[in-house]
Every structure is written in structure tokens, then in C-alpha cells.
Amino acid sequence: MKMNKRFCNIKRKTAETDVEISFQIEGEGNANIETGIGFLDHMLTLFSKHGGFDLVVKAKGDLYVDSHHTIEDIGIVLGQCIKETSGDKKGIKRYGTTFLPMDEALAMVSVDVSGRPFLVFEAALTAEKLGDFDTEMTEEFFRALAFNAGITLHAKILYGKNTHHLIEALFKGTARALKEALTEDDTIKGVMSTKGIL
Image (cartoon, rainbow, N blue to C red; front, side, top):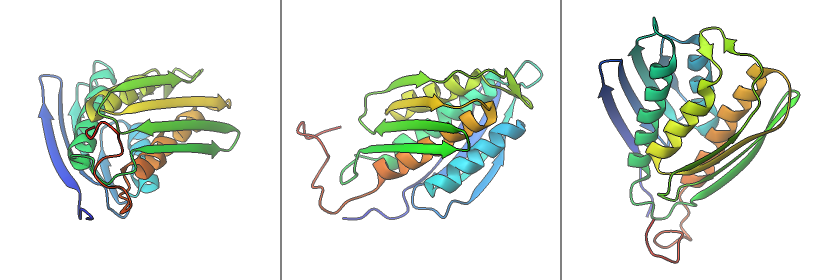
């Protein structure tokens, strides 16, 4: 049976950040993103569009320190939203893999909505910053996402040079792989596992 409107809203407030995210799997790719970090706003807007997710992110953080806490906490809350909306995982495809070209860059992203968090991240990002975004935080974002969503995530740049293109390919690729993995399939009875539980 199809689940309609797999939706959640999660708030997380600490001494460093105040993050609220609304997330809907069966969306129209609509995004309303305000993080205080322009490049991250751009990446999350792309994530929403290419996953077909409706996504609202409102985040305020201690950007006078640096972008670390804000980016990581957004990854944490978005991961929690993915975990909540995937529910008991019955009827979903579970796996998704995407090869995503972005001009000269090519990324491979593979996802298993397994309940077992893991991240493999391979990307040589040569530029240290893109606007106010610290590029080393790309890996931290995806780690926070994977571990809080309870997914196995492999994200790898196969080749490419432009750091903007490399990171954009990873965000788009992750969105498309997640969309595939979270898609419901009427031919799947229960969960896609011989264990009977994920």
C-alpha cells in the first residue's frame, strides 16, 4: 500500500545553532532555503529539485566562528527527517545509485537505506572556500546526513577539476540516489531484506 505525503518537520536548537527543517518525499522539488551560507542554499535547492523533495530549511548559526556548526547541524536535522519519513521502510526499493555528470566532473553516489549508517567519501576538493562555504565541510555534511538518516552512503568523484562542479555533482547525485532508494514499489512485500527488518 502506498504511503501518501511522507512528511516531517524537525527542530533542533543548541547553543551554537537553531535549525528547523520540513521535508516531504513526494514533493514537487520546491525549496525555501535560508542558512546564511549562500553556496549551501544553492546546494540544498539543487538537492530538493533533483530529488523531487519539498524542502524548507531555516537555520541560524554562529557563522562569526565559521560555517562548521551550521553545516553539520543542517546535515543532522536533514538526516533525521529522512529517517522519520522513511518510516519502517516497508515497500521501498532500499537501494539507489546515480552517476551524475556536471560539465567536466563525474560523481558516483550509491545509497542503501539500511538502518546501518556508514559513509565512504572520496573527493579531492582543491578550493578551500566557495563564498562563505568551507569546502572541507562537504564531507562533514554528508557524514551527519548519513549517520542521522541511518543510511549507507558512498559518494565518490570519479574525475573533474572545478570544485563548484564537484560538490554540485555530489549533492545532485545524492538526491537522485535517495529518490530511487525511497521510492515505493508495489511488488515489494514488507522490507527488502531476508532478515524481515531494516
